[in-house]
Each structure stands twice: as structure tokens, then as C-alpha cells.
Length: 121
Image (cartoon, rainbow, N blue to C red; front, side):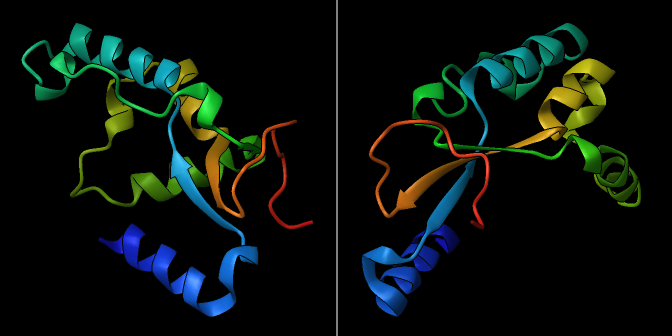
């Protein structure tokens, strides 16, 4: 509902020229997460789900956030009452998840071409 309300607000505010992105996780990366989860917790409800994540061809924007990895991990560690989905991951897989933000541009509609690496030009 939050996503739908945000998209509606953006359309009403500035029309189709307003840039709007949705955060996404690529299917290949989600498959690696499921494999790691299956190895550590085969009873998890998630290990039987198929097609988790966004198809790679639908990802329009990839922003390198590798320099923020230590800060992100420190921030997650502060939420001790919450179980992190990254706990079952190897350091390499966690780095793969947290060193880039993947987005799908929904407005203006993506017309293909080179994947964006910046959202503020």
C-alpha cells in the first residue's frame, strides 16, 4: 500500500516527469540467499519459494554503495531485537547484497539502454 500511495502521490505532484524508483533485489542474488538459508535452516518457509526477486532485465539502475558497507553493517548491528536476513550469509554474499542498490525506474518509464549508475544527475 505504501508503494502504491507513493506512486500515486508522485503522479499527482509533477506528473510523468517525476523520477520514481522502486528498490529491488535481483533473482540471481535472491537464489544465492535461498541456497544459503536452505543449508542453514532447511525448515525455513522461504526455501520453497520460487522466483524470488526481480528479473535482472527489469533492473534499470545500480548504484555502487560499497564504500558504505561498514556503516550499513554497524547500523544493522544496533537492531539487536531484530533478526537480520544477512545472518545466514557468508561475508562475500552479504557484501554482494549490501555493496550496491538496485532499482527499477518506473517514472518516467524506462526505455532501455545503459543501466543507470546515478539517480541525481
